[in-house]
Image: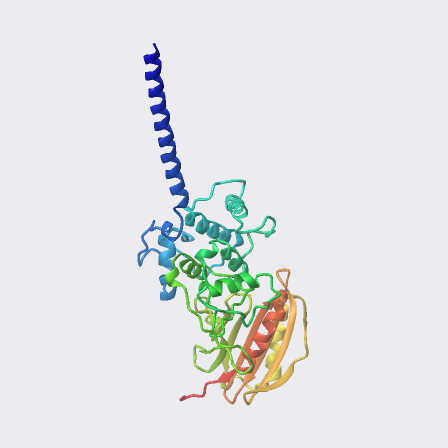
Length: 392
């Protein structure tokens, strides 16, 4: 009897030892899974081909979009369109930042569905993982600014994954008192952000495009794509980069800074030139008329007729008296108009300018809410106006 008990005891002891060993093996395996995090977790999930999206033509977009698409970090608006110039909402940017965080820590990048909104799960995940603070955003469906996106992505990876490769202490358009100052500099120093010119100008209040998000994503998850920076000191003696844009008929040109782009896809048959800022809020249209086709031309009368026609399309319209000016040796008339269009207070600035043979009417428009930012850009455009002489 004693022998039997002893034998059972030995068996029980061996069983307990085996169970303990198996438990330790299981715990070790789980611990290994927990510790499997880092950039190796970003693995290829999709194949990007030349015909994946029909609206991608610029090489710099393709270069950044390919890895971020293949890693499953960003997809198209539809099955065959990426919409590179489309803007990103707070919800979309937050979902992408949460996906980056979740994959880095060994997950599949899929947010749990919670609440009535498609992005509620991402919000909860972001709050739980300190990507955002509860109540940080009151409207998740508004278009995100570059500063807001920089703040989101500055918390999407740990500090060990965003080590400094640059030493940037200031930027031309970022003040130390700005709410996202630290986050923006953090990403510049990590080589994620590089700015829009040689001075590192960031344009924090501009809305961010899907193409720009693709660039940011690629640099976030592929450290070799990050940028070493050596920025120039911005001061009054150093001017930003200018580009010269000619009208369709070659009769005139405008020198514009890098935040203006030509609206070729929306080009009107009546306009010789259409421009807009990257956020799309400040727009310009220019029309050329040959003076030989205009009997007894008077610049002041011509400008007044244009102002009158525009005023008819506005409610509560008011305008300043026309001002005469000489720009690059050419006579000009400038008028400011303010009024409501679709219940939005808008500002129009019109300049009619002439040389010996031609008249150009330039009209710029922007909402009153960004007048402080847009007016200097408009004035710069007018001051830089230049006719192109035939034969040059």
